[in-house]
Length: 289
Image 1: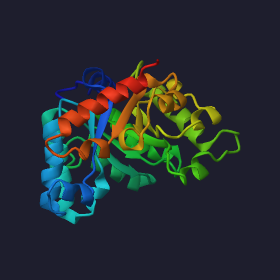
Image 2: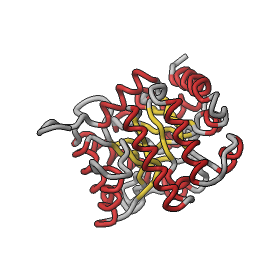
Image 3: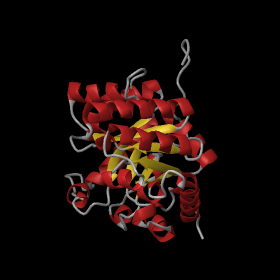
């Protein structure tokens, strides 16, 4: 950004990347087993080789890459240094980065997280981060405000596919709305007030592609939120056209499918083909028969 020019909002940049490269986000998830399968040591050096190879092979071929922060943090400061390098490589190659950190806190602590991941010039700055709203959606305000100011985005957990999630996300509040529905409603308001007047907003939602009938059962209107929908469950978890029709009916345009193991398991020399196959499968699943 130069002078007083406003940054291009994340929602617009993501929509353009999805139109150009397809609706696929590939996770950079350096699990110990994957490092071993790639012939790499489970240390910072192996981590670096793994993650930078994913960026090298897939930048310009998928809409976004999603480093899983925990799998870098497990290597301590050396792993965090690799994560900084990976995020810089994403910036240098022009591929959007979604840092999967699932942070959520209140007050100055939330502001600290926001500046760590969403401020211009921050070593760990990403194009977007994942956030947890379970201290109240309003607690995420520092991150949302900074994301809007810097042209970045956030993805707020709404409906996850883990069995334990339903106990919180499906719970009904005094207003008769479920927690998940209230989060989606609130994200819709944030997008209505945000920098993107039409199309995808810069405040997204995390909605598992294998959550079944929850969207319908809880009376949730995903399309009305104008949220980009980061959707785990494709690839190794097997979500296809039937699951998409049940979860994302009417909101298909906003779906950014997340796939990690199904692509990464192809190894360093098979990444491009695996990503192309995954993109084709997602496009097919998102297309009405």
